[in-house]
Length: 447
Image (cartoon, rainbow, N blue to C red; front, side, top):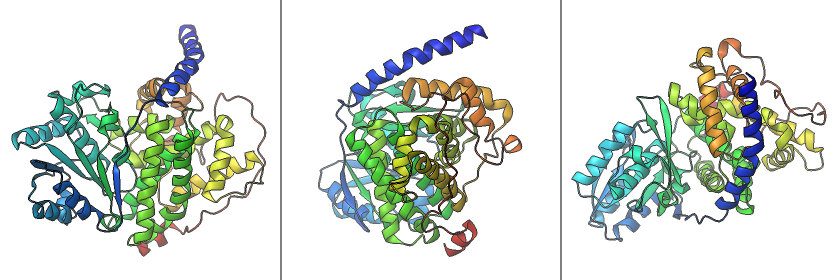
């Protein structure tokens, strides 16, 4: 026990300096941004543009649902009209498991493809990125796990997101899963950013409310963690704050009225802004915990983020109070002249209320108490080695946060931070309703 405590103290002393140095480096790394096409019909316009680029044959990576619904047909028709060959690989499943990615690589090589279009949600885009990197480097997906593991740039990649959440159309990373070990693996390289992307809100109008909710809260988590972390820049802060404002205004509308093209387009843009923010500033403890839940229980990533977010924000409130207070103003749930602590509390309350209005559960049914120590250990390792968090989680902290998510042991409200430093007392404040909210039942009926 004493050895463990000594190790924790040593790590706590060293990590801040290491992460400050890493943050200084990340500010200097050039990150490309794709050419963006935005608006109804932009996916077809992207197809027209790709057809002019002289590719021999395109691998269109997607999933079976998108094929069945015919969502990609306008883009495929545009490729055909431009005499550009293509083959559709529509076998992507959630979490992009390695065997499936390997199958996509085989199709790419067998068909003689030289470019990829990712048409779908986060798993589709992650699979497409790794297929492109592995095909260009002649390596297996496992060999590419980590940072900048490929000598050659991936093959040209173009993206059409069909959900507003992951921001993968502008990010440098891809997350795939190892079904044998029940873990998620990250492939990161600035060259994974697509060359062009289309944000077509018409593709998102048919999303079920629960998918709209989970992906929207995924985007919110990206923006919030990018903003409250320690690697923010002026650019990433602007992107994060804009994303939070747009999500609070438009997510309730998109959830209640799925065919609202204006709300869908603004959510697509908010997701992209949040993606730009965390690509530069990284994420934090929410993702460290959510990745473990996804790897162990196959919980959809956006849903896991949404469930975990209120708990981690309360855990971090003392260290991130000023930034949480600013988020409250940008979210429209507090006035700037209110005390900082009151504004921070209002933002925390608004996240809880937004989750409730979108039907997000407070606890994870799949989570088992006996799994908590291992999940906590993996989450701490991920956060310690990757994320510039405002407050570091110890093993005990992570276990307490996870135990709060277990249905049988869950308290009525998120727990107060544990082992926290003394902070100014917060005044009780009335929770202000998030704009545009109604009950989950009325919203589902309206959809």
